[in-house]
Amino acid sequence: MSRFRLSFRCLAACLAVCLTFAAGAVPTAVLQRTAGPIAVDGRLDEPTWQKAEPLSPLRDLSGAPSAYAADIRLAYDDAYLYVAARLPAKTLRATLTQRDSVIYRDDDFEVFIDPFCRGRDYLELEINQFGTVWDLFLTAPYRDPECLALHDWDIKGLKTAVSLDGTLNQGEGDDRGWCVEIAWPWASILGHSNHPRIGKPPVPGTELRMNFSRVDHPVPGQETNTVWAPTRQATIHAPEHWGRVRVSANPVGTPEAFPPTIGLWGNANDANRFADATLRAWRTAGIDTLILGGTPANIAAVARRAKPLGFRVIAWLWALNRPDDPVASRHPDWHAVSLEGKSTFRPEDRPFVTYYQFLCPTHPGVREHLCALVRELAAIPEVDAVQLDYIRLPDVVLPKALWSHYGLDMSTLLPPYDFCYCPRCVAAFGKKPDPADPAWADFRLRQVAAVANAMADAARAAGKPCGAAVFPTPRLAAKMVYQDWSRFRLDFAFPMDYASFYAEGNDWTLARLDEARAAIGGAFPVLPGLHLPDFKDNPEALRTLLRAILDKNPEGFCLFDASNLPPALIECLPAAK
Image (cartoon, rainbow, N blue to C red; front, side, top):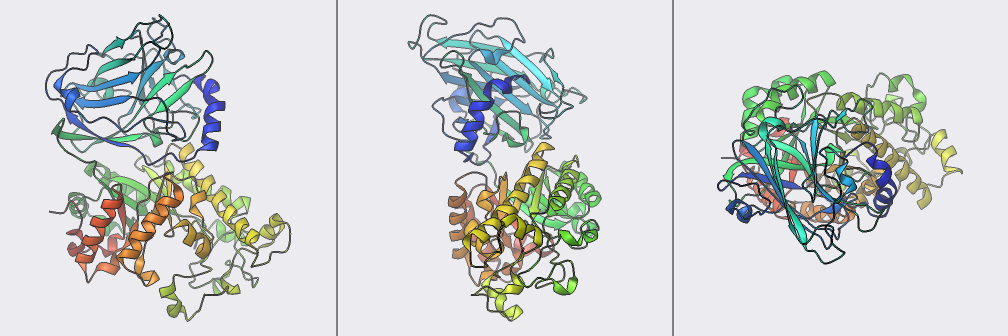
């Protein structure tokens, strides 16, 4: 897909993104071994294609359902990655016969592979109904000024075939469709760029990022783009949004679900917490994602040891709460101000605890600083994504179980805990705020969402997805901390479903999960975060809750935190032996 392709698609795709934001969770697939030899002839009659599971349906770039369908199946052997696609079409037409033509100007089928899940150095293959191929290698997405799209790069040993159910270029509306079959050598997938050519598949458990697209031209001058993994952008070239494909050692047809994500928060500054033996034990138990706070150097150091064991690494960043941030501490005017006129710049004026050094979400200097911090973390090669925390204001309403701890009754608004009444926010609101005015509450909700979205956009511009640790549901979060995270443009969310803070139990956690998923309408995955100290004396309660969560939410869950994960709780995890 060339750089100039965006100009043809931009208007329609942008309108779709504006009208429909529900892009759904990142799709997943398990890549299994072939059931025998495959003759690449486009007929798709081998046992492998009868047994392989089809991928989930195609959608438009925004995530909305599409009228265009494709039955796409995957398999592999020691030499090749195989792709098969059945593409219904009422009219078969093609014009381009020269290799490396701009194939999407015809109706086509496209495959994208990011073999190392880095958002860079990825591969693209397009094929039309003549069987004409355009294969190219991209050093970075087109949005990156340093992108090089090598159009004359060829996949050595590539095999492709197309079969037609109908008559090419012979009328309108009387055809039935076409099939594509591809054998893509592993040596050209894993051996591209400066990587040594390795003519064998990845080891089982390895993940690739992939996407698939069909382009159709229902009428001259009109183009539709339908994809497996929606990118919520006017381009498919956003590898951070592509689907996850995990390599399996099992043959096609073996019942096998994509494993859930199990995340674990931890502080990378505590190097002893991440000993190699500990990392291996966690990985064996099924934990596959580390959410690491700490300095960038320490996050990178832990990530370098964790990545070879198969962990994904998410950098954990405190956002609007910035205790001991040397940059923020030089700017008193950056800090949030309460209804009483007290600023979090002064430790003695901070609500609840001295580390609540919250910043004003409206101040442009704050936003620029936070986006710079995101870019710094996203630039760490071993980091797969960035997670925002404290992307909110101080608690105007604490979870009810904490009221007695602070000797408070927060059933009515308490001025010392209501922020941000700084001069900049008041001026931007345009009038003296009334604490009871819903418009004033909405103003602060919009300002917090704007910060979250600016930071998420900064991460994505650096090629990394961005999510957030948030309060249990957008409704509760808006009321308690001015955080309506249904307005956030996230790639994932980790709601902190700490039931004990609310004097509740497992049923409450499951109900909040249902509420949160309904509130965001499938716009991004929601993985509930659980407070491990709640289960230290009752591991069976954790085991029961995890089973119930996975029944509702196969995508997974997260655990807080590494310092509270004894062997008794590790044994409760789904993959624990």
